Length: 117
View (cartoon, rainbow, N blue to C red):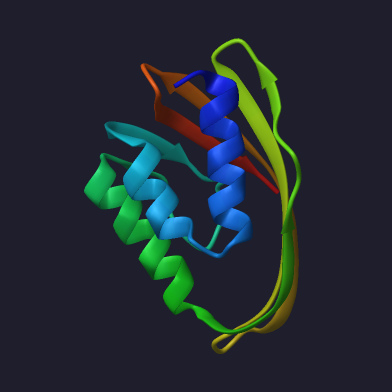
């Protein structure tokens, strides 16, 4: 798959709420996921660890009120997506996130992601 095809399908799955399915389908075994220092979850390397990080984040959400995923912007082997999330977090109350997600694709798999918020 091309970077554009991976990006389009990832966004499609995320818009359907199928984030873990997207991870299983498109993330490479050696994926590296970089979070900002102030993020509620820490950076991770390797598919199993990135999946666990996502599950940890999901377990922190008490209720989701809304969210969006922009169309991807693709350039070469990279793409970015703007994401928003409005959710109530356990013990922290309702919060809104706006972030830019940057991905790198190699051989049809996402091998790197970094989040900015």
